[in-house]
Image (cartoon, rainbow, N blue to C red; front, side):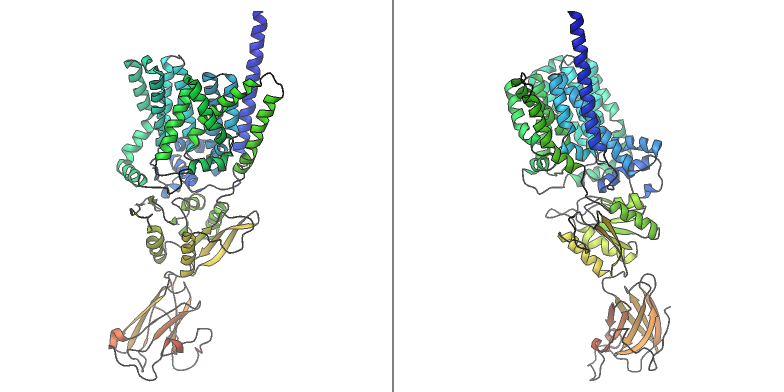
Length: 626
């Protein structure tokens, strides 16, 4: 009898292992499929660039610092990725593969928690729910910190579950180590400590704690925080400055923002199961139910109360939701367990409901074309040609990572900006609105200095948009005005699925409006022009008559001298017009004072464009710029 029992147990164990392997393979397929179809997003490029610097890429060191500008997170993911870069070389796909591996490994970990707390059925169902979670798949396919954080949090919860289930103190020490790694991944990983603490308080499990076990756990936790301590030692003041900027950021969204995010990326399976699961947990109140409920409570309340919201912040909650959802499904299936039809049908319905979000998650085309735009810039522009693009704080780093070009943002955001070379520009703090530094202050300055030569406009809109850039926001409108003010000429368009997504403009002048001044010394007029079309001829007129033609330099400036016209006076216009029709004018009032205009005084209306003016007649001389 015992022999048959052992054989049956082995058979179930083999089936369980096969089921878990199949579920993990499903998770891997969804997370790894065609990862390189679209290039990195802004934050992804930042983390990939930081990892490349850690791996020894000296060129990228110009663009990335080893410090988080956002919530001042630490660098665990970047260290792991740097090791992969050292082995296989720097690539965008590898950055996503590393994040995807963390996401995939979270699936069997979730199974392990479910099996430890509730049994093999709950563990397998939870693993399946997480494997087909559109939200987890979407974030697992991005080179962000959240999948690494979620893996570490789930690992810590598993170790904590083993300990509260009667395991030895080694599981408590393992929990401390995993909690330290969770903080290394992202500072919100520290929330795993109150999760276990609250669970122990509610279940009176704290009675198992001893001074020795707590002391050893604290030491293990601090040792695992060594990378974070090193970062604080190296960049302490800058870290605190970034943290001070970050905690002032506020998202103006409705209270139901996070449920809306889950519904968008995950469908309604987990949203429907979550309240049912919490009711079941409240009724049963087993140790496992309480542990999962505190997991959801601590992370959920914190994210809901924290002023800054983001679509990726809920990921550490998804394994807990999958476990509680599996708990409810397992209870429901136990009612129809005798039926060979009802249980498979129920699971099929759940899987079918998950398919549309999964399909959407693997076919996201946001930021399509930015990688290709960076490659084009790298191949077709001078190495010192700077670029500016629409950004919420990070999009410019896509161009820096792929194109190895100095890149700058255009937009409103409460984030510090790392300029090429490592200079940190902190945002100006405003209580009433987001800073406008990178809309009204820095763009004109960088364009005037020649540090920016190309402007890159991109859109996430698809469905056969028109050839012209789609403008939907005020920031996009301001960027389009910037393109127009600085004579942007379209030099390249990037298409994705036969739809234009990115437009690259070359700047042709350095000022929105050219400037013209002159001075007189004896019988010589010295004329200076700024902000005309780069390397273009500029025609000069006085009193409506052609005076000279000069050549603007590579910055759109020129200096030239001509004899003082015989009819010179304070109210007559000196006008400069370049080959693109950009013009500037000035009078001589600053030299000769304000005298009443003579009846035949020339005006700007007397000036013809260079294409129409007769530049070959009269006594006017054609001169070159100095």
